[in-house]
Amino acid sequence: MRIGVNAAGLAGDRPADTGNISTALLKELCRLHPEHQFIFFTDGPGVSLSEFPDNVQLVEVPRKGLRAWQLYWWREWQLPAAIKKQQPDLFLGIDGQLPLRSKVPARILITDTGFLHGVAGMSKDLQRYLRKNTRKYIQAAEKVLVVSPVVKEDLLTYAPAVAEKLILLPPGLDSSYRPVEWEEREQIKQEFTGGVEYFVAIGSMHPRNNILPLLKAFSALKRRLRSNMKLVLAGAPTNAGAEIIENMATYKFRNDVIWLQDASQETLSRVVAGAYTLVYTSRFEGLALPVYAALRSEVPVVAMEGPAARVAGGEGVLYTDPESLDDLAEKMSVLYKDEVLRSRMLERGRQVTLPGSWTEAASMILK
Image (cartoon, rainbow, N blue to C red; front, side, top):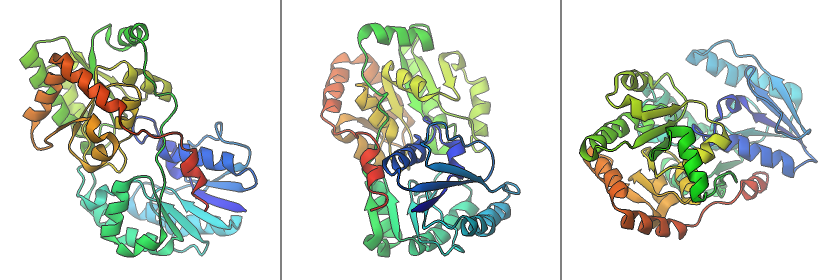
């Protein structure tokens, strides 16, 4: 079978920003099915096949520009033309969208429903567009794939008819996340913070990740405890996050903030394993992979209350009121000061069921 894939988004798939969900799923899918030929449609350079098996080929369909109408033209005219030329038997839309003018049977992967919640940093025009068209994509798809119960429930509320075609894939987690012994942890701390204890937060510099509230809470903690504690931020800059980056330049405790803009998977795994605590401040993600990563690494977690964090962390996470910076600062301070509480949270974290690899999820995509 020939399977077409909209792989344009793989160029922006990064461990700290997207969790590499699409890349990880596709790598496993192509590996599991050497009998099939996969055609990856891209909109320009930037997608590498170095980690994919030989049954994958790239077809570049150059996009004319980044304006909304140019993106629409690419998806609804250029992409269907390329699909028709390649004649796949099935098309996979792994970016939550489908080319509606294509007649090829399709399956769609939806990982993000932030547009249903007015998520910060997403334009109102884009939110309206997705609220209007995602229902059309669902109707056009043979199967709708999700990797989170949170996204599943959102879609069932938004488009109840999706129930008959909805498939919940079990989430995966990169195998590089692991707990480390004391000596290795000291080496990691020396590498990233000069040997100082640190909090870590994973996610792009985007308003939806609540980086500014985190910085304000960290300021309150620094004033309250007068400690040399550091904050490590792992995530790429974004256009929507320009204000965050501007504020970091004049932030009072900027010398105590380390920003890893393009962390590899190996670097991300090490920085998580060496952290004193991971702070998760995104409220409307579909899948809280950083929470899973920290718990796998036996690092305690402070998280803003939200559905994805609850699904991932259960009782193994210390939750904060998302409307209260004081509460976030207080919970971070308490974990820093109270070793008994920290040990208790670590023990609770060990009781949480964690994901395996992405193999099981990938094995369900074509069923």
